[in-house]
Amino acid sequence: MEIVEGASLPERTFTVTRADLIRYAGASGDFNVIHWNERVATEVGLPDVIAHGMLTMGLAAQVVTDWLDNPGRLLSYGCRFTRPVVVPDDDHGAQVTVSGTVTEISGGEATITVRAVCNDATVLGKATATIKVG
Amino acid sequence: MALNPDFVGRTYPPAPAYLVGREKVREFARAVQSTNPLNFDVEAARAGGYSDIVAPPTFAISLSMDAAQAVVLDPELGLDYTRVVHGDQRFEYSRPIVAGDELVCKVTIDAIRSAAGNDMLTTRADIATVAGEHVVTSYSILVARGTDESSA
Image (cartoon, rainbow over all chains, first blue to last red):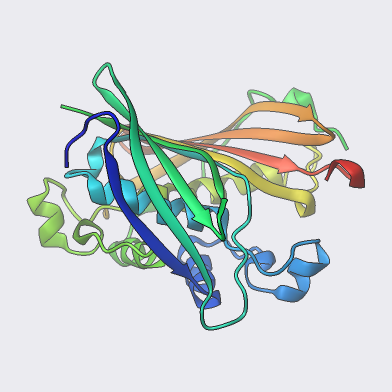
């Protein structure tokens, strides 16, 4: 790990199936019906069941913390939920590919810009983490 | 329906302390597909300088969303929860949450505004140990989509 401007974090692709949504619902306590019930999801205008935004944000966090020698370096982490990750009822699920780049270093902190892509579309907006350097 | 602006700055009484369980951390870590030994292995966490296994960065949401329920369900606020989506989320950390932490979560309404027919509510959840050590603050923006179809 070398924290220099322009450094790329190792990319990781996560598969998210319906079973993964149920697992996250139980682990987090977020049982919103649109994350497991296709009937309700389509009734409220969604194309299908969608992943919890916080699940996608949680997957993306792994790319940052796995790159750090110490997760205690993480100072902040935030994003917008710009597009839903649609999870079909099949054996393949959805694929979310997460990458990160060090975009700025100043005042003992580095900013990592995180990119999460599903079906060629960015699903998290303005996703950034700041970390302590040195 | 517009949200009641008098609620900005309102702080809600904290829920009883949340004891962070080792198995709950492992369960959450599996759910976010972590492969990091610090999230699972006590010895690895201790070797890394932590008293017990380390929770993934978004674990705090389980506490803050739970505590925020008191706010979003307050009938005087006027939030129609069936139209609410999570728009934006940010965490500011003093340190990672570790198993064994006993945490108190205090929720404040930071901002209420309207844009493009939607109501936006910013809540801040300050999470600290029962001894008063700040651990993480969670900022959530909830968006209540307007009933006007053209702005949805």
